[in-house]
Image (cartoon, rainbow over all chains, first blue to last red; front, side, top):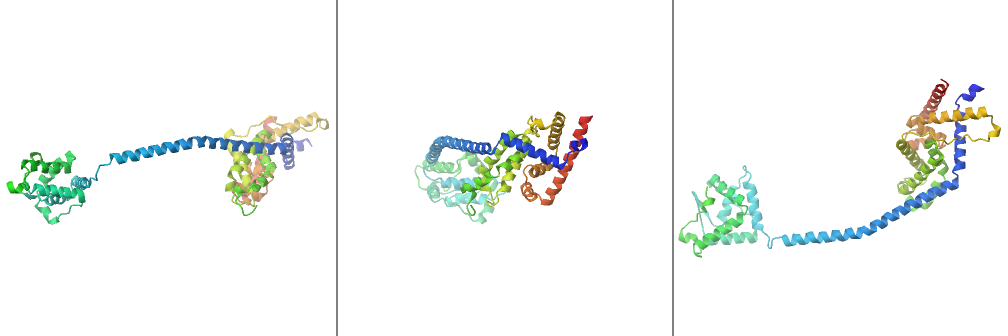
Length: 211
Length: 176
């Protein structure tokens, strides 16, 4: 009998569990459970509402700040934008990028650019009309058409010298301005003469552009 | 009730409240303390209230609710690093019907039983509590645990055997 009392039987387990539940139920009855659940959910809803209220306060402020910042950025972008689209510069930059690549065949483009401006390369000098060059540059500024050149001219270019000249221009980072200024300077030198070729028949690049 | 989204149907939550006693019993089984069980039950219903929109089968929310209960209790176990034995004692029978010797023996056995339950491996403990405390069917336990009915039955047998073994171990340790 004593041994049976000490042994853990399934029946004993069930009884203990039932007893445990009964005792727990006396402490926490259905009504208390219901009320506890209700209170917990209500509290959670209140917390949620409070959070929402908190958010309601800062959301308009954040939205206003966002709008102000956006407007500021847009204004800044508009104001800092060049007065007119610098498309010629874009073309030149594209050329610069290609020149920077040793394996590229950009010489033809550069060569054709000068050719488009009316210049011709002969041995170590470029010859051509300044007015024509200026008007071509202006045309390029307006049209921003990409410069094409016949690939057949590539062989005729003493590319090392030309590359060196372009490297200097690139370092100046003002390629088209340098060209433009260069043409303008030449025009002044010729006292407004419409064509330099009328006077000299050729145009030399300034000292620093020479290889 | 059927055919509408659970999140928009307060009736479903009212139906879930009917199972509060089962939920409480499961929580009691895991926590071994009625006050902790009460807290856990509230927690379970709060989670159910918040997640009611995820209920896939509104016609049978029982298993879904018990799954929340099981997970909440296991999370709580992990947090508390095992079930704490408490001073709560279920053996408060009318003393005039029991001899002092019997009462001492019964309290000691009950304490050892609680300790043995606490030492059960987590998987066996879960099945044991869902069955013995929650009074869930094998099929329901399988749904709640995400296992097969056969696995549930096997685990329950192993849980009972392990409980007996641990209980004896504790009992023998006391004698020495």
